[in-house]
Image 1 (cartoon, rainbow, N blue to C red):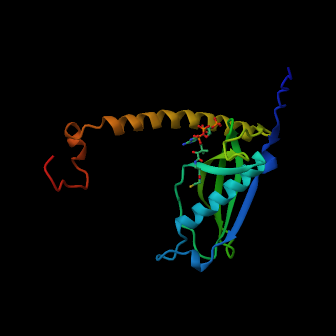
Image 2 (spheres, helix red, strand yellow):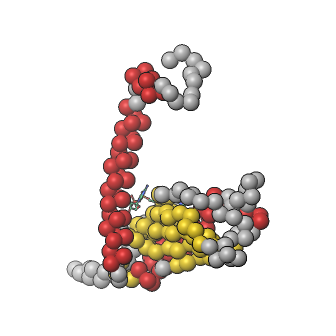
Image 3 (cartoon, rainbow, N blue to C red):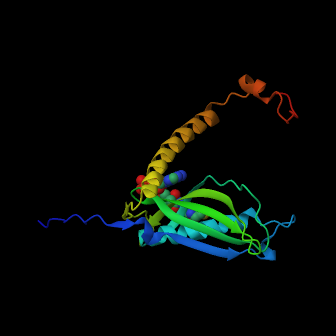
Length: 191
Ligand SMILES: CC(C)(COP(=O)(O)OP(=O)(O)OC[C@H]1O[C@@H](n2cnc3c(N)ncnc32)[C@H](O)[C@@H]1OP(=O)(O)O)[C@@H](O)C(=O)NCCC(=O)NCCS
């Protein structure tokens, strides 16, 4: 009988896949208020998350989940936006990519931090099924902090998803009518 030899675990350092994407904010990216569309920034974040994840995985990756997207400050036409991505955590087939977005006014040199978000990506193999990703070599105390933070974030997310599911399935409308008091809504029918 032929013995199967277990594949050795491959590890890749965080620096191997660290990626920065810089893009000039042109007028066609603006909304009616003259600021950059949130969707443009989301698309750039997805792009850099993909580049970073695929480089670490050595495989095609898909976006599964996006956390922490809060646009803290508007981005203006003419600003240079840089998106800095690194792998913060790896599971078996998934990777968490942390992305810091900054926008620079090229005239004044003023740099503002617009947001930090977390993209969970899953590596896919030839058969289109999730495939194992290399382990992560943590090179600095900052890498260790991010990995630990990701572990805690994952735990909190799993717990809150359970709670959210329970709220959705158990929500009794009549019993919770009082929670609408003081809210900016009105009932157009009798409950
Ligand atoms: C991502 C996808 C392959 C997961 O498939 P699945 O059958 O749930 O596979 P698994 O249960 O084995 O999960 C694979 C990994 O994804 C993780 N995962 C699945 N759903 C997740 C979620 N909502 N949030 C975070 N991680 C998630 C699992 O924890 C697992 O990670 P691990 O291997 O590191 O432990 C599948 O949902 C998919 O193809 N989604 C569409 C992705 C896509 O097309 N994205 C583009 C945007 S439209």
